[in-house]
Amino acid sequence: MTSSLQLGPLALPLPPLVLAVAAMLALAVGKRLGRSVGVYAEPALLRMFLLGLVASRLGFVWEWRAVYLHEPLGILDIRDGGWEAVAGFAAACLYGLVLVRRQRLWLQPRIRWMQLVLSKSAGQVE
Image 1 (cartoon, one colour):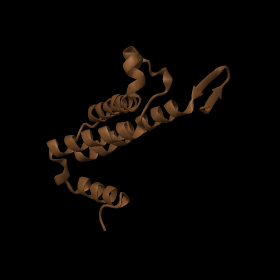
Image 2: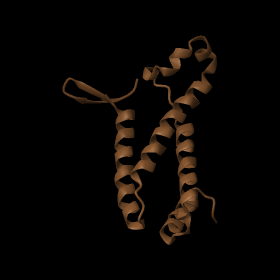
Image 3: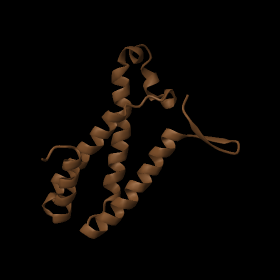
């Protein structure tokens, strides 16, 4: 059973609540960092978020494709809680990399520094 946040008679499930808070935090940080670099980041971050949600759902549907072959309209019913987080995160990150490469932002020193920190934290750079 998924834990939830009780606010009187209102029960909010924690996973979507955490996702919404993370999206708002990403938009706030993106706006602040984007302003310092001279880039309007909110539309790109929203597209990354929506693409991640769609890819996450499609990843879950692919994992359970045998079930969804019998009920194709069940793909649209998100109440089953079917989301594949890794697929969504990977799709959003790949789209973000495409945007950065397209706008040639990696040439700026701040972006290079962030890439180095992310690659070190992922264990890619020694």
